[in-house]
Length: 443
Image: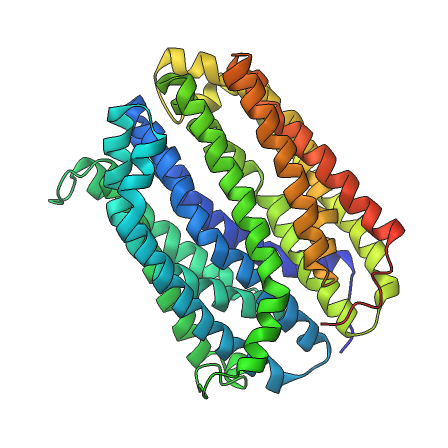
């Protein structure tokens, strides 16, 4: 089964992935917008709490990328039996991993957060958020594996519908539980945590129903489980664990970045959460194209069509950069109005605008670097991808600590560490394709 790399097919595969990412980020955006009308402390707590929680979720996301790469390769080989085997064994691993991580969240979160957060107000609100949010980890991990299957087999249309469901559910319960509307209790930051859990639960239930009612998907018999295949699990883990470490270090670095900012002040933390929320929205097209690049490269490797990979990467970079330029031009002349959606606090808006300018430069670098980096993982060399990430993060955190804590620079200077991150990531990923023998990698 040949993999078509035409613009039409790229968009067909990428658009549903982008819409799926929209859903995940709408949860973040709606939480931030609603909490922005509570207080700076609520905004800061949501930033710290959200990133802390995602350090646990991101391990599953890294595992899911490994699963997606293998399913993509087997899909290119038209090997349905192996796809079924990989899926069922991945579910076993995801269930066990989510249980173990839930226990860590349950037992040690209070101790850990107390040791790193200076502000008592931020600490209290962060604890309230995690108290509810941790229960979402089970559905989140099952959803990751289901999405890995749909993306790996290039059946991404279902993500459009799950996006709509997750979005509507999250907005409704955010509005109801944060402010106490429609007869619901007024829970503030904790309400945002509950709303997110409910939305993720609805998402995974919908995806599971789709597996059973979709005729093209039913041939895979995904939920007819057999006993765990240890050899297959070890094969999945061999490919996935570098991705898990890579994702964990990546989001862990962002979490530590926000811990550094929390040491600067509550206003700076609130500003950073607002900018982060918008930053993640404008990243969505690039993330979607990166995910499509990853799975299409994997499919091409499975089809033994490696000669198409470099042309694919070039097309993806052009699409990614063009889309990003259009997005930046759509808001760059009205930054204060954009920040005004999140908060009416004049001081917060004024402090956020210079940071938004820095992010606007960064996102252009990201649009190129992330595509090449995603292609590296798609070839199956996840260990090299991990080493790239580890080296880049070491520079990232060193620069953030130096500018934020040692030199006490302005917030926009601290945020400029993002530009350094993507320059180094892009260069090291580019070197991989011109220096390494990547075409012969087997998984």
